[in-house]
Image 1: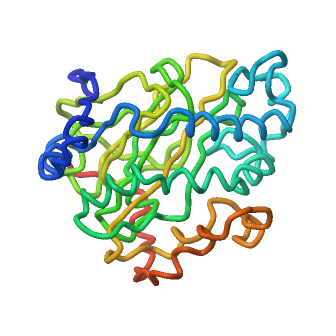
Image 2: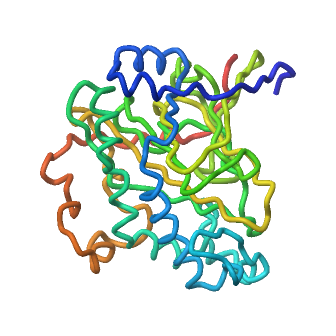
Length: 310
């Protein structure tokens, strides 16, 4: 790494979105490699989902007693009783707990919020396709966990090169809790060769010598960060070993663009039938079958480590 690393604050694009100025939003995204919006999502809806995820944590005995339904203090001693092989080291909790989260109807519903659909519809200039493969990050300090390394999403999801990631915390998330940070304008590099790395995804990009500008900030509930799939990003280290960091990764693309088949499967070993078993509504079940998205093949070479020539 070089000695010219800089850190700067997110630019809030909320005003451009309120004005419906999608040309300016697209220009800013092209220049910066991301868009950030203060409280784009209704706070109460975000916090309700937070409570649902924390109820799962409570079920497994990992929450400290005496908190309200939104308290994120963790009994790390109890969590560390979970054997390493039972943990999802890309998520922060056990396989069984994560399966319970994936079964939550509320977890799958929030990425379809009208505010998000309107945002991507304006950015793409056409109908939006929401990937059904949503990811909950429930970052804890269990011994198997490592911060998410600097990476691009494209080799992990493939499909359309104009797929966007939407990341938002479920609750307030200051830098010290390990929020997401992006490398400014890194999407202009296109695909960057990878190397193996610990943490979610298991890969990291190789950066060349030169100035790095990392963009970051303190998030509050309702904030949304979004970026195209070639933008390099990573998680900041969590400085609070006794707290859990809850966030959502959702992905969006134009409905006419291709998608890789794995993005239509659950982010766990459950079937969609098992996930849907206790849902009250049917409108989001198998919704993608109505649009029959075009499928693109998986390219194994994108996940092979290779030396980057700078």
